[in-house]
Length: 242
Image 1 (cartoon, rainbow, N blue to C red):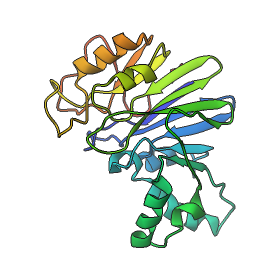
Image 2: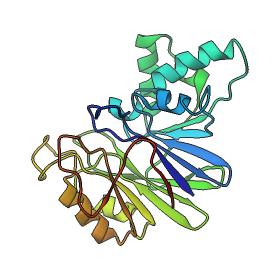
Image 3: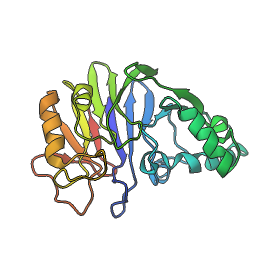
């Protein structure tokens, strides 16, 4: 299983960086975890149009899904010139209705259905993309419905935190993972909302150690905060074998 960091910024972009987007490849299948602003442009640096089997969205904050909108318009344009495959789009319970309501305001109600094969995942129930298995776990992020993803293929396990406050659920999702891709947005665990929505670096490390995961990749970290010492920091274009 191979991970490519397409975008790694927090809710505001770090200089020259796209927002959240993480490509996982295994056994000939490719799934994009989140698709924030700037991710589509990054993918188009590699090919005229992204070749992905599926996209899975952790939650509906713009920095994690915003490039689904230009993905729609680009697909419509290119489809007039050549066939474009429809990737699966996995969203949380109720996510399809959310996208329909958004389409009513942005273009037309079924704009996302015309572009993607829409499907809703269920908490703690694995879904498959080829031979890649993804299990969503509900984690706390303000009051928004939000999920971490546990991704498995060929005996390897990658956990992606999405956005999360400290929680036992996040630790469970990362249990014994080969790679834990974990956000660290805050400086010292300050109150960023009621309830909280993010982790500090210390809290990300605590979750990593409690989970027994083998490797930590810190992400979603503002350029304004100190660079982690002793831990890897995600950057756009980083590629790792899991």
